[in-house]
Image 1: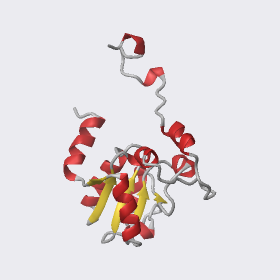
Image 2 (image 1 turned 45 degrees about the vertical axis):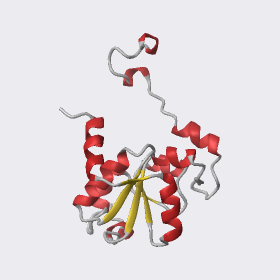
Image 3 (image 1 turned 180 degrees about the vertical axis):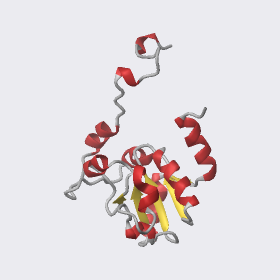
Length: 162
């Protein structure tokens, strides 16, 4: 049985990743670049890269094709464009790019470290109103908050870890 981390590791063998500083260069050099954010709508509304589009990972396959309620024409037409896929940490984006490659996207890459790394690199994020998001607010938003019941059995009490 594979774990989520196993899937990510396998995906990384097939998918090209770029770092946040690479994305800043690509945005400047290629005005036709498409930044695809595969996080959930509430995450995108809170903060995202200016000019990016949001297609949640859960509907990506049908959003990439014509004739579905989820079809996103700009995304369908981007099979020959440079596409950088982003998420919070760079994991969902790896899975998304792996699927996009199977669907014929020729130049799709994943943002390694995700928007966490983008923020750490002090690149701007905006909210749905187009207002800049404070870097500390973004740091807090990107902080993982696991509830005790979400932890692997036996690890609920973090004080018992070495």
